Amino acid sequence: MDLKTVSTHHVPVRYLEGGSGPALVFLHGAGGVTADDPLLAELAKTHHVYAPLIPGYGDSEECPEIRDMLDFTLHTWDVVAALGLTDPVLVGHSMGGMIAAEMAAIQPHDVSRLALICPAGLWDDEHPIADLFATLPFEMPALLFHDAVAGAAMLTAGRNVTDPNFLQTYLVNNARQLGMAGRILFPIPERGLQQRMYRITAKTVIVWGDSDRLIPPVYAHGFKKGIAGASLVSIPEAGHMVTLEKPPLVAEAVRGLG
Image 1 (spheres, rainbow, N blue to C red):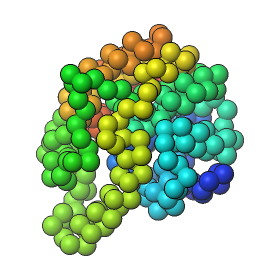
Image 2: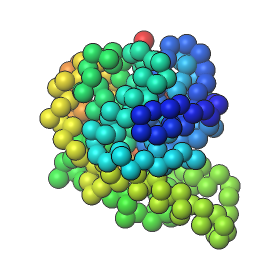
Image 3: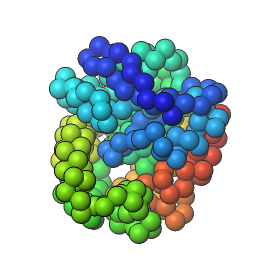
């Protein structure tokens, strides 16, 4: 995947691009996305993939003008327009799924295919979503992965997590990213999407890891109920980061949209 830049009204946006085929826009979660992401590689086998970074992620500029859910939604539509895309397959994971669903609700005639992978955006008092902002780094693998040991190895990529330089870089990047993500995820990741989902007309697939401990799989049924005609693909032995644990199965579900 190549890292490129496109201009939008508020801020230059960094994005990853690769593959060939129908256009597909992938919106990442609160943890961000990198050029070696295995799901992007899978999707790029059959699609021309564009994966924009939310401002403040990676080496992209921060953007104080993007303040709330509507700002995130319209900004991402601005990115799609700046890339010259019309009716791309829209795919979002976690926070990115929340944004993708809002995009499909705000402009239903501009999205015909939608894939939501463990999306945020709903809230159930009986099944609260884990507080990402109160979770310590060493707690993340068990929260995000079915296999916590393998997940920890994926998150650290073999780096020495006790190295002060690693910790400094991690904390600075984490503060930038979660500072931006917190505008729509804190204190809870709910901004009224449930009242707008009826507007979504896209052919929709909802993908969930059966072992998701961050956003419990019960939320999959809330999305399926709220989006007319949506289908649900449950993936066993996978957690919230099903995108890293089972990328071929996630890509297969997305390709099912046509």
